[in-house]
Image (cartoon, rainbow, N blue to C red; front, side, top):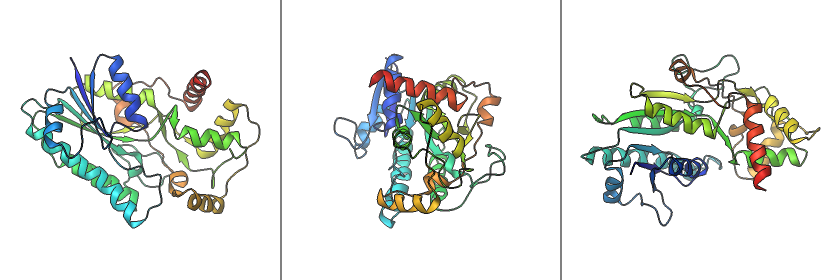
Length: 299
């Protein structure tokens, strides 16, 4: 039976991927801190799981949806770099290692950009805590020299699907707060979760591909366009805007950071498109229509 290993596979993306892989006939093994899965402390168990696996996908890492206290900063960083190094050591220990190791990275690695899009070749790496985490994460991944395992880092934009970020966004619209956030001009780079999975399968099927890829739709939008599209699709005419001061206040109240909303992520998947990958949900309207329809059918 074909085997895939999902490290940190209990979150929004991991749970979705697990179901999709099972439908394709894969045995899915999950490494996580939750009971019933392979534990991060169980090096022998991880080695055994990776032995003969077609693919390793690492999604592990504490959510950045929190206040950036010193303690949380440490956990955010170590939950990415430490797990990546554990996996690398296990791949090296395999006599029949996975052919492909895909490691999560983040589109946040690029600078705040409202002037031009960031591509893999021409994008400028930013500065600050989130960028430092992304750089350390990729460094930990590419430090490993693996003769039998291809390595790909996906710089993933905001993933849209049933759950995840869609829940707070639709709630804002539902309660009349679905206007632009902050200036509204900041770019919102995103990818539908089905396209993210299709991207994984695509790079698996094209063995010449390796290195860094932007995992984002080719058509990012501004925050104002995002909220307008959501209101239109949900049939809500009015949405009050949220100025920066209100976002700062709200972020403290719900214990998160305004960077998640205010940073302009303008990211284009230049490499994958050049390699022939096509998107099923290339525009935001298409993606939102699909997600909201699914949500209505399941409620």
